[in-house]
Amino acid sequence: MFSRLAANTLRGTRTALPSSTRSYASSAAPSSSVSHLAPYILGAGLVGGGVYYYTQNPTLRADEQAKAGTARGGALGAGSGGAQIQGTEATKEGGVKVKGESALSPDEFRSFKIVEVIPYNHNTSRFVFALPEGTSSGLTVASALVCKAAKEGEGLNDKGKPVIRPYTPVTAPDVTDKLELLIKHYKGGAFTEYLWKLKPGDSISMKGPIPKHPWKPNQYESVAMIAGGSGITPMWQVLQAIDANPEDKTKATLIFSNVTEEDILLRKEFEDLAAKKPDQFKVVFTLDQPPKNWNGPTGYVSDKVITDALKEFGTTPDKGEKVKIFVCGPPGQVKAVSGPKKSMKEQGPLDENSVLKKLGYSAEQVFRF
Ligand SMILES: Cc1cc2nc3c(=O)[nH]c(=O)nc-3n(C[C@H](O)[C@H](O)[C@H](O)COP(=O)(O)OP(=O)(O)OC[C@H]3O[C@@H](n4cnc5c(N)ncnc54)[C@H](O)[C@@H]3O)c2cc1C
Image 1 (cartoon, rainbow, N blue to C red):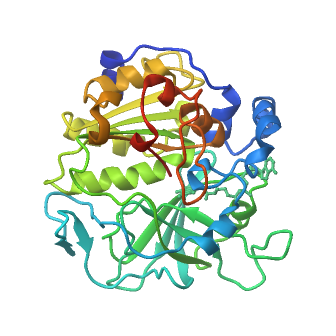
Image 2 (image 1 turned 60 degrees about the vertical axis):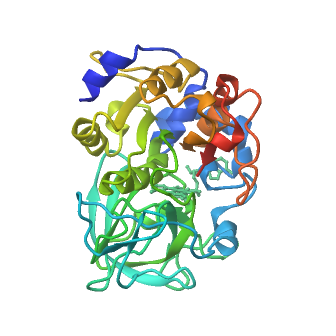
């Protein structure tokens, strides 16, 4: 599906971002990528060591954000799994809300057992957690959860405080009995180095939801999602919600950049969506290091990649409030595409030199996770 889409809709093109950005996005800082990383780190050691802008204020670590940002509510929940979503009820805003008990709490950390660790690719694994029988995560769309070590005294930072990091489950909010995180391993990463030592039977503490952009069905005619590396998981959460709600006619175009083909997370899921509902979902993958037979765009997410991809569903700047662009990825990519978020709570203006600004989009049309 992708090849067809790519061949039909996009031509290869060079871009405006340094390759270091994408190396950061989808590789776990392997030694071979050091030369790629150098310019980024040089310019941005800056952003708290590459923790995603989609998190946060560049100066604020997730640990601090977690303390500050676990406000309840604000979002509509939605489930997955076809036309009729089980265990959900309609809300007056037109969305769906997960019924029944939530396993997670926004007010306290709760411990969940890892039941399975399934390698996904060279640096990413699926962590499957058991939820109490009959409960679901209860996360709203779009929202995240935060994780820390469940065992006292473990997973601490160099100041002796627990390392806390946000993640977006890949299981939909109404899935009961289990929750799955798709996590990329960062060499030297405070939390993922700890996580990679754990085994099935061990536990992790979680708290949530951490609300992001409250998804309202049909609030926009169309949305675009520009993601890099593991910044893809919030996009998948929103796409699942749209797909699960037959009343939601929002059209969505995903532009997903990675270093190599192997780095593309959830590729089959996106291709299946685009194949199932081609008039509603469109996906474009861009690669820094494409294989010989690659038909899609290569390099960074440039103005041309965005313009070409968003033409079909008319996600253009002149549409005002009818369109939204979601951005989520590594700092270098976010900086080039939109400019960073002003702070944890404020989106702030678009960077004057960013691709979206130059294309004519307004700050109100853009949301960074
Ligand atoms: C809303 C949200 C949802 C997210 N969802 C997911 C998800 O589903 N899956 C996922 O994999 N990730 C997700 N993330 C990212 C995740 O929260 C963590 O940032 C990521 O796992 C890295 O954490 P870490 O503690 O292992 O690495 P960190 O310690 O934060 O470091 C990250 C990298 O930067 C390097 N580094 C650290 N400090 C410096 C420095 N001073 N200078 C230069 N380099 C430095 C480290 O060596 C490492 O390679 C999400 C983030 C947000 C905000």
